[in-house]
Image (tube, rainbow, N blue to C red; front, side, top):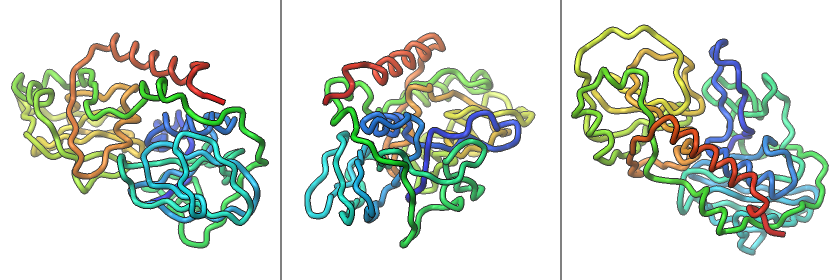
Length: 301
């Protein structure tokens, strides 16, 4: 499940096309910054299992996100750093040792035809990326002209502030008051397990059921990224990057923007918890995250 991803195609929800894009946009943005690329340049997103990549030109790479045990020929490769790759060398990725996804960024960015102004692969609909699908053995990808990167590695002190969380912060959903008070306490006082049925469209969670106070018929409406929907049966679903743009299930909460990258690093069988925050706190946390990403101290030469 290796796909070409950038930061997604915003603004096409009214046409029924969700943004897609990197499941962990923080990791992709940092990888591109290490190489002097645009933050939104396309890279490769690897999910749970790795792959083998042979380079036909001299270039630079950066690998960010979760640890897939990367090797350059027979030598280990440090994550969160820029590395020189010579023509003919091979990068090998194994299965993940930590979170769900890692990103292989290349100097100049991966070049594929754009669909609705984005290179991102939307797997569900078969749009974007390389022929709208995950990579296969023998695929060839183009990168833009490589240039020596201005930075070499991430400052671990600043990078720690951007690390994925297992306790996600949540604001009230539009239908939060439809649920019993006990259900809202349950959401914030118990742990949930990520189901094997999860994917880029949504993370299905297993745990204590969340009960509505009164059964109501809900009119289908637009759904935000990170919404925690509760279908019949009471098992919550976190709407994710290849989401349906509308839905008819009540929403008890919404994962804040600053924690969406953490959602992208959750694996099947991982445990996750939630904690409530106000809208003002959610905004401040996003501003803090953006300040860390823009900080002059983030990258070391």
